[in-house]
Image (tube, rainbow over all chains, first blue to last red; front, top):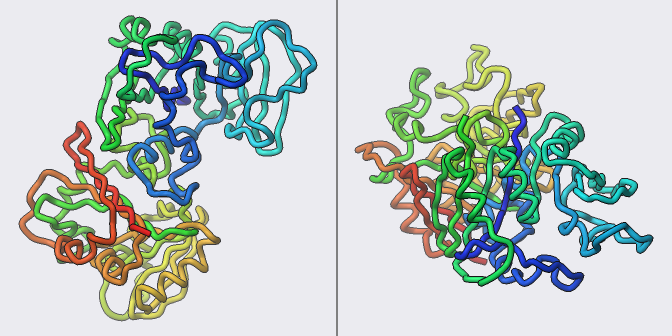
Length: 212
Length: 212
């Protein structure tokens, strides 16, 4: 049974997980402080980096385990809005996007797929969450699908009851504004069993496992 | 830089991590209660099993990340002592040993290597910890080496200052007897930075990272 998983979903104490306005300079809007606690070098394993293995990093390392495809919102792929122009944009990540699997990018505007040598490919799709998930499963070769964000995309998949597992990380800072997650979690929390623990760094990790 | 790592080293409150006498019926002596808290199905990743992803299981899943070889004591391979007899023993694990890499078995008695279709192979070696580690590194293809136990083997590698990382798990039970780890940790603790957190299950996870 393949799962749909959310990983490393960082949320402030007041429940905000990204800024409302994405620009080329600020890919996650005003919420950059959230991600100062996040060491993305560990998404491919605790051995990947010459740095101490901490709990936060060990939990981060589950990000790619058994993942065959990701689904992301357009804002995670780039700052543009409206129809695509021929500007050569291939995502924020240069020649080595960290995904190493097919990625479905949700957008109302069609575009040809893009492929990279490291196994990453971007597929642009105008679809509902359920249809996007079906498409991603077709690309995932029987493995799990990750909902990669941003927060508005995670909200949509939670509301459509398409998330089996979510690793939510509460960061002890107050942002004051952004895209909130609390209201949708209030709606869906009864579907999940939630485990919570705080690591010595001050991050509170929550594992939300959907009840069967 | 390849590391030498210990994973899922389970210890009782009184510091015992295995029974003193290993038999075919009791591979870890009298300490079986320690491992009732351990879900070995997750050593190859959080996606590997159709069961909720808990913190304990997520931390367990770091076991195989970037590991190219294991070193184990003879007692982990089998209950026999003295020269090997032609009894067909190929380890406790049947046709699918969970290692999937070369494994160096420390023994004073020579024996031909054994190979399995899933990538596991056992190489029998009479050597000091330092020499065994050098041999394992030669088999590990640049990846990390895991010291797989039992506790006496972990003790030897700690005393020889050959351990870079150790995931120690304290289980809230009292065993009363067995192979103790506290005395050697008293000797070596100053070489490490220790991070500790307790998961909702009651297990206390410690990550020991060697100082540089």
